[in-house]
Length: 210
DNA sequence: ACATTAATTGTGT
DNA sequence: ACACAATTAATGT
Image (cartoon, rainbow, N blue to C red; front, side, top):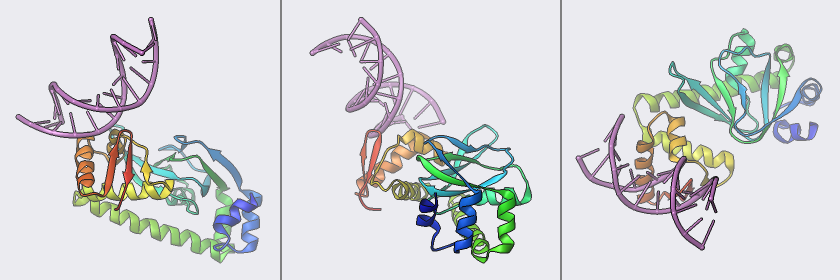
């Protein structure tokens, strides 16, 4: 566990902290599609992502999902940070996008470390800041209805987390994540194909140049 | 190997 | 948004 921990967080955390993490955290493995956090749940530990990727979703009254953002290795889930600290219910759902490894840290410890380790405090604050900016960006895109931009961003993110130029999803799945209809996605993808940025295949999309 | 069905994608209204 | 055609994948016989 120490090894995988160091791989991702070595530069960020001091030695003592790394040790404490490996002592108190437990390493769990999740399979693709598994739900980590459900809306309304109380969180008693916070996740550090070692490998893989997690997607964070919001749900509306009808039970429809909207993709908020992805978490990659080396990140944590900021919503769960807030929930833990405030002892609130989760406002979001977390689903594993890929098979992933996660270290779960109990709330008490993370509170303790906030005072004890500067690197921990910085990590928390910085990732919180990053996510905040990303959220603002997402809100902009929603407000101005730039669906094509959202789609491009989605494709890029997916390319990044899978480390693969070929994206394995149907138009329907993408539409569901971006909260639109399949037809809209199909048309937008077609445009991107015509401008030579992607190549469309059945059940998959190849990214040429975004 | 073939036929049938279901799912995915493209397009016009 | 809806309807439908065309294409492809999945399944059973």
